[in-house]
Length: 170
Image (cartoon, rainbow, N blue to C red; front, top):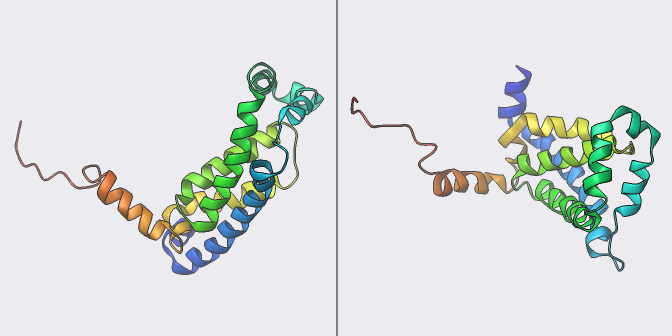
């Protein structure tokens, strides 16, 4: 019953609009200076802090190994991905364009930050993002998804969403 409300109700779509714009603003402001600031963003300090965090070493040994052996040696790539990921997730949520994808990538970053030992606003953002993900299309109904999703369904995936009308018997 609650899922039906979340996924199909116009009132829920309105509430979700406020949630996604709030989250989008949080993401956009977090990434803006990283992407467009006077000095280039460098995630290596953050990565070193996470690698040396005892809680990360003990609780998430696989994630620790990933940070130490892959993320830190590729800190420039991760710096770029974090800065632009935050900006793009923010824009997607604010504009309501590809809302579910933006929410998915946002929650993925939230969990990555939490696994690295940063609490901050991440749990709150995860909680709100779960509602947006559960609502699916309805979360972007009062946004660009109103036009983008039907376009994607009819133009890009036109043969994937039409019922099979072939009556031949094999």
